[in-house]
Length: 338
Ligand code: PHE
Image (tube, rainbow, N blue to C red; front, top):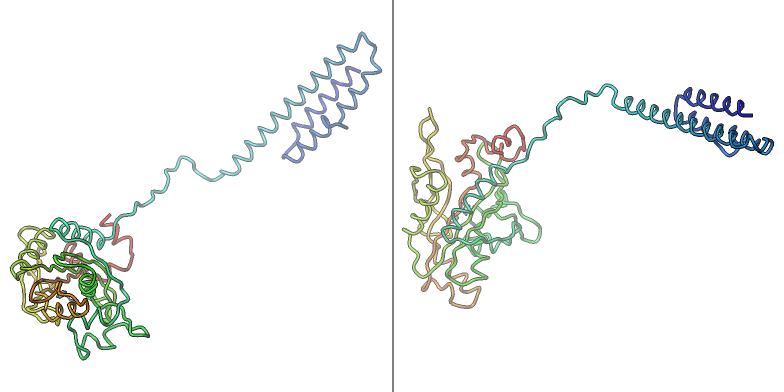
């Protein structure tokens, strides 16, 4: 009897070690250790064993069970190791990982944030307005008559129902004056839209930063000093700034501002960066009429306004020659600023 158990144990251990996968291993386990397995069959024979031999018989059974379980555990581990090895076959685990490029701020964002930071230090608060505007806020309230070329259908994106994509951030001047009383000192960065053909210096979507200061005694010298200070804070103390007389319907007098750009090995160039001027009294009158009070009565207040091209500022700051680089999302270009 005991010999028989030893034989079963040897058979089981051999069968288990011959298993080649989980499936055949499980079959072996059931065959030897299962309820109807060989070992269970043998142990039922205990009733025929003489009493004095029962302890030895029981011990042999236990030994067999232990041996079979040990064989099962060993084989399970072996099969698992084999599977692990197979799953990483051909992979060099010592190879360094591919580096993930870290993101960074877009050059336009960097320049915009810096401009805002400088102007906020100078007392300007942030203001905002919609990009889908009424003709009133974009043109009429800014003293821009119906026959002005800026209102040409070919120059602007119109929606049905008279709305349009704002052609400049100057509409925020109007929205601000509708909702506050002087003194007003705001800046409004944001997108503007024009039906321009795309080239190295034009995009149909571009970015501006509007400024407006209205108080009882604002003078042209304040405008000039503020913008000179700002541009030198942006581009360096020695930056040369030039004001050229110009025309805008909503400012009088009006100017365009140029910054002298010096790139090593090149002739210095004047680059236009902004339009500006003293708020035209006609704009104040129109606001006064609209509001029905005298908060912005041109008899009481004066002001200046400016609108800078943020894309231009970025191009100057970083020496970017083609404005399209700002919207192409080419990481080879963008990663230089991260
Ligand atoms: N809105 C003008 C433009 O887009 C710029 C400007 C703003 C001029 C404010 C004067 C005052 O060209």
